[in-house]
Length: 162
Figure 1 (cartoon, one colour):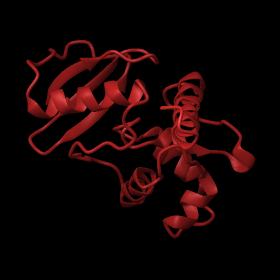
Figure 2: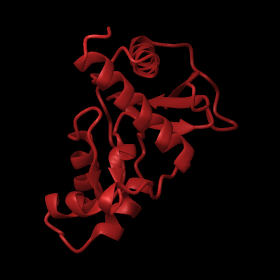
Figure 3: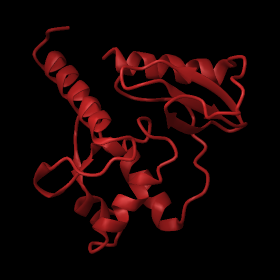
Figure 4: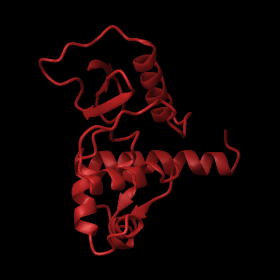
């Protein structure tokens, strides 16, 4: 894996790529003991998309992903997360129903926590019943920041403020 560090308002992010695509985003920067790689085209593109996302300029990630690990259920959940449109939210129960396991809302929460590529695979867009902010491996303050960023950008675009 090749790593690059991206500065973001929610702390630095460690972003890793393998030969197929982006395979990891880690809050807190590049893990200790992992060298930062000279940026290649893929890592530069991922860093640019993340920087633009946090600046409110980009709404869709186009970098190729290399999703590794996870059970079949987790991978199905991660795919559902990836399809949640920018600035929209789903509940854990809605994701559970979408993967064919309507009684597995808690398991969806566990799968979200194990998401190897947060922000790009937007697990922050999953909320509890009634829109309650619950559970986020990166901390609820990060989840709140990401949701507020997307809501602000959506309002600005819908009302032609930018």
